[in-house]
Image (tube, rainbow, N blue to C red; front, side):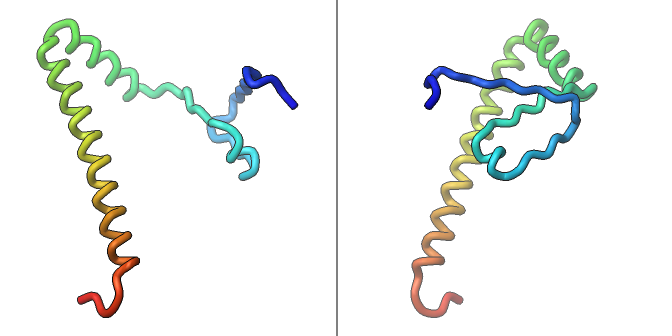
Length: 92
């Protein structure tokens, strides 16, 4: 038994640690590595938010819209696969 608020945080200097599947199934791995491209993107976003808040808002709206499209596409794919799996007879 353990307390429901118990949390255990582990860190490693390994760039790509490997854990057995039973450990991976019970944990959440977070990659905090920093890249030059990632830093450039963050800096660009900060500059755009400061200099052109209208463009930053438009960019955020487009990201939200793109995420919605991705979710809708996944739902449509699942629906098509379900219909194909449950169909009877020849599909041509």
